[in-house]
Image (cartoon, one colour):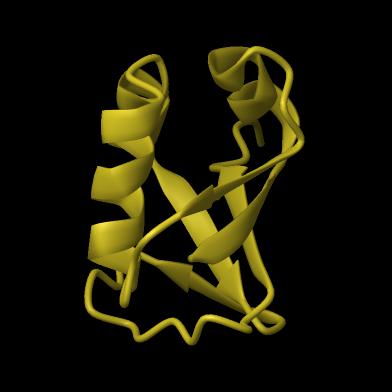
Amino acid sequence: MVKVVLWGSLRSATGGLTDVEVDAANTGELLKALVEKYPELESIIEEGVSVAIDGLIYKEAWFTPIKPDSEVVLMPYMKGG
């Protein structure tokens, strides 16, 4: 199981949870598992999210490995200019 910390608007899609756990070995599996467990996340994830794994931020890196003890943070893309 991977513990995922959720930032900002992502929390509203999980009933206010700040962190959740899912089974995943890479970022693609992580996003799929999150949508399966919390369907309201799907539209937010489709708009775009970044995944930080052990302090490194990944954008559209679907096969980046995740270790069970990794620190994982999911963030919506920042908008504005």
